[in-house]
Amino acid sequence: MDPRDTAPDSWEQEDDVEATIDGQLDSEFASLNVNAKPFVPNVNAVEFVPTFVVKAHSENLNSVVAVEKISTTEVSQSAAPVENGDSEMTTEEPWDQKEAEPNDEEPGGGSYGDRGPSVAATTEETAPETMEEEEETPAPKVPPTQPDAPKKEHINVVFIGHVDAGKSTIGGQIMYLTGMVDKRTLEKYEREAKEKNRETWYLSWALDTNQEERDKGKTVEVGRAYFETDKKHFTILDAPGHKSFVPNMIGGASQADLAVLVISARKGEFETGFEKGGQTREHAMLAKTAGVKHLIVLVNKMDDPTVNWSLERYEECKEKLVPFLKKVGFNPKKDIYFMPCSGLTGANLKEPTDMCSWYTGLPFISHLDSLPTFSRSSDGPVRLPIVDKYKDMGTVILGKLESGSISKAQQLVMMPNRHVVELLSLLSDDVETDDAGPGENLKLRLKGIEEEEILPGFILCNAENLCHSGRTFDAQIVIIEHKSIICPGYNAVLHIHTCIEEVQITALICLVDKKTGDKSKTRPRFVKQDQVCIARLRTAGTICLETFKDFPQMGRFTLRDEGKTIAIGKVLKLVAERD
Image (cartoon, rainbow, N blue to C red; front, side):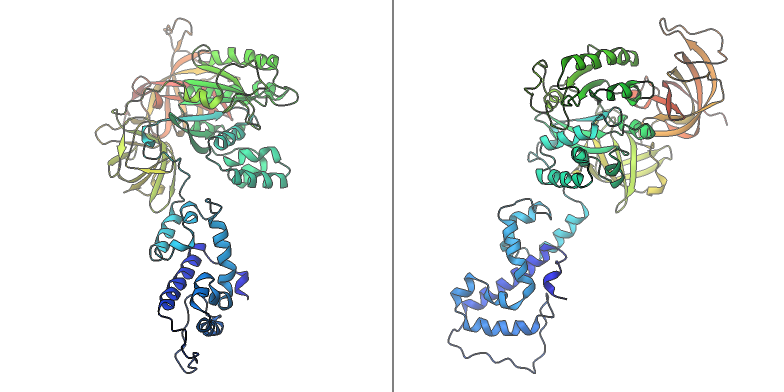
């Protein structure tokens, strides 16, 4: 097979080979005797096999003869022996140089592209090692201001809303506008999306990375990405809108500080998202339960022909949403902020748009930047609920540090199993750090525990202050949506921080009056929709939880059954196990 057809394993090796030859030639030319007799090869000598190509051996010998005849200057200008010698290198060399000069972003990753082949000679020993390291941790595109990075406040933003409201597209557009996804990648997505007749979906592919999500255009897992503004560092959590994947969405919302509810202004789409079975209502309620204090409502698809940036439609969506959000517990004056935008064109995300003269507020990214800072306790006890885990040269876990601060080589305890683990390394948004404060999304590599021994919902604590774990607790519950009555013995699925566990209501203790907060004297026999009660719950396995009073992030929960959210609640007290 012609070596011309086979691409080398990595361009870097190619560079090395070429560089070593140039180096050898240069040293030879300095002491080249131009008037020497023509060189006659010794046919019986031991065969010399160059490292790169065995096949081109005979041609190499010819090329050596050629070298003798060519004058020194000519050789140094054009690598003639290489030309008639090794066919593989000729196809390679112009390509490498051509790529390296005009374009910094080499397909193989940044740092090598800028160097070009010339420096490779000096770094020929180190190059293969660095390559190997590069492969293990794909270097993320880090914004240039890295030394000051930790000073920026970390904020997690979750995008929620009905299926097809445009959450992933807005996320992709924001990443493009803040320079986290380069134009070339987006053009590639656009081409691929066009081939599948899905050209309006290409922006969402920046967040919907796996094949199933792209084919159906529906997010399944919670996508993660990050971008930075002048003052803050944001992590985007792109939650799935489809009702089958609500459990994933709850996991995403439990890590967020701020929720962006995306609704579609297109005729018919807003209505379906908001009706009884739509996800707009459910998501807003779940976000509130997950502890999201601030809600931004993005009215998306304003560029649609049926809407055409009309103020009437925008106000109509707003009027329908406000009473509902109020009922869930958001304060319309303080917690909610409405803004129109278009995810596909990017209008009003970074720059204000001329199409929409009636909107006078800041565009989306500037608004995020101007939000007040969140109060977090960095000196509190360490609490890191685990969202996900996998094996990668040891055990790696993902999660958001809710309180406290951790550092490399620290000893922590994994609850509820009480495993003592050691932190080998910390990655905050894919950038390695030595310590981390509350609110950061972390990847931790642990020592002293196997990946199989961890479940999502476990919590990392410091040994001095362990979190509470147990199976029985008393909680105040609000029944949101349930067709019949709920009696003791009712089973549901409990979602508390990142933990999902089966739970049974073992006893109803009392009803609570919604307006006055008074508790009933007698035990209720049942509760029904829209009532508030205090009940005793018992989970199937041991879980980690805290009372709402001590630690709100780990003391609020939702109960779900048959794919619907039935109740939201908060933990009032933990009941000790009776043996």
